[in-house]
Amino acid sequence: MGLLSKIFGKKNVEERQGEPDMVYVPNEDERMNWAIEKAKLTLWYFEESLANPQQHQVYFSVKVHIIDGDNGEHIWLTEPHFDDEGNLYGTIGNEPVNVSTVKLNQKIGIDRNLISDWMTIENGRLIGGYTIRAIRDGVPDAEKPAFDNSIGLYIDEGVDHFKADFSTPEGAILSLEKAYNNQDLDGAIACKDFDEEAKAMLSGMKMDFDEEIINNTAEVLRLSFINNIEEQGFPDFTVTQSAFPEREKIDENHFIITEVCWFPDGGKSIQKLNTFKSQNGWKVIGPV
Image (cartoon, rainbow, N blue to C red; front, side, top):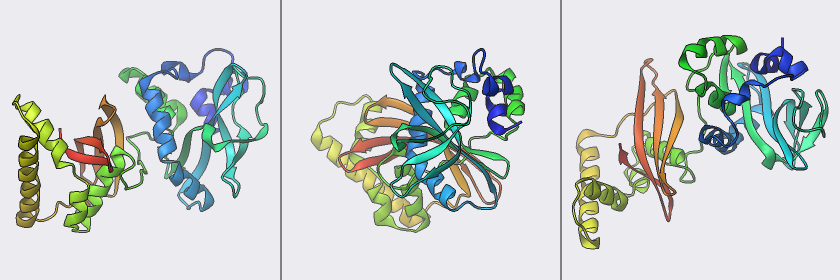
């Protein structure tokens, strides 16, 4: 049985009579929306891996949104590849239910903007596959072992390949950790927003404050940050891998991000961090 047969069930891949596992998480579900966004933000890793696959990477597949008039369906493609212009080509990997413009095993080309997920298997472990993870999150805990067994994959928090820059909350966190490891104080300061951190702290203390109080508090926080590093040294964020399984939206410019880190000694940590979208991109404003 092929991998897609394991994911959707052999009957669903060959005949698709009845509902596939995707019914656990409808497209409008917040979990699935985040899964699709995460897949798009980390697509660069899939493309680089596909162009230069390593020995431990044994499977590549990508999910795309097929549109047929007023109908649409997200379908996995096997044997994916990109041309020099970045257009995607692949083979329809499961029998469509809601669209009639494509069929099982048909080779197609499609706009890369219609990609909704990607996955690789590395050392028997699922990397990417964010919509699969969203489906799994909707399965009752008691049924998760059976779900994992049915697809024959080791599913944990995964490894998320966000770029270390200020374009995403996760990238801001990675940038801060990179600055710590490089012992780059200016780089670490650039990852922070002390004004917003001051506002959050003052609000939490239920204090009345104006711009002057915010500025003074922000300067105290900045100096405290610098002094702590000078006295205690840079935090060690030499991690073997990290994942960002949750993004809690407070408002459009404020997200709480959950990060899972694995360390070379086998240790694992989970932390929640406040992030804020400033005029200069996403910044880290401290732990929750």
